[in-house]
Amino acid sequence: MVKRRRAFICGWPVEHSRSPIIHNYWIKKHRLDGVYIKQPVKPENFAGFLASLAKKDLLGGNVTIPHKEQAFNLIKYLDPVAKRLGAVNTVWFEDTKLHGANTDGYGFLANLDQCAPGWDNNNTGDKEAIVLGAGGASRAIIDAILMRGFKKVHVINRTLSRASKLVDLFGPAVSAHQWNDIQQLVKNVILLVNTTSMGMNHMPLLEIDLNPLPDNCVVSDIVYAPLQTLLLKQANSRGLRTVDGLGMLLHQAVPGFELWFGTRPEVTDDLRQLIIRDLAEKQ
Ligand code: ATR
Image (tube, rainbow, N blue to C red):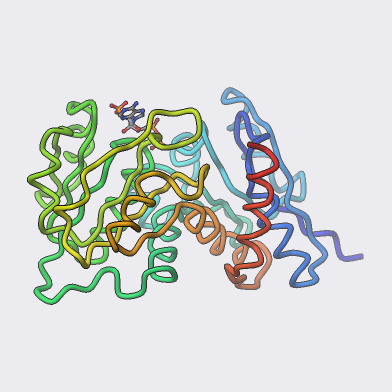
């Protein structure tokens, strides 16, 4: 008898995760005999959990906060992005060996490619971006932007020392700045992205003067609750193209699903609407 194929999301806590809705939607759409389940695992039990995957008949899954760095340290076979970021969010088996990848940067780029085609082209080829924030999401996004040939990435953070520590992990193209510097840095950028938690429900608003931004600048926010943050509303009013944060969550799930279930799924408006309804219910 063929066993039902099972994948998981492992975190602590993991209750709030939308990944099961995404993957179970694709399982149903592709008529697969599978299921994607939540696995709440405490940090001290994570190594044991990873070691027990095969025994539990789990094909692989997603790893989320606070386990991404531990997964990086425990898994031998890593994709180049996970190696660069020191963090794993997707695990799967190849010939009984556990592999790890990081698809956050892929999700970020695929979302921009889908929602703002041509976002990374400019006439001179001298591409510049601003990244607000210096946490884990910022690191993945800086790495992804550099892969697209950006020549300068300005990282702006409330705590300058944290930004400085982060930019030291990259080459000279990436520099650290304080919020006060923003007005002089925005003039030549073709991408401005918020990776801080500002603008999220119950958090302080993110207010920036977007007037000095070039007309071809794309503004993106990784916050998706609310979907239309003040930053995105202001960018829209200023006539700039905007990309919300929900698409990154959806696109980062694509490679994992393909690895576990052998079918490459699509990020459709139908799926987006399903998550938007869930966000509205659970606000
Ligand atoms: P993640 O791993 O998801 O990126 P994180 O590591 O908690 O999350 O990082 C949160 C980011 O939001 C940081 O850049 C943080 O700035 P600090 O490094 O100065 O803490 C930023 N952030 C959160 N709340 C903020 C606020 N009220 N004002 C300015 N920045 C804030």
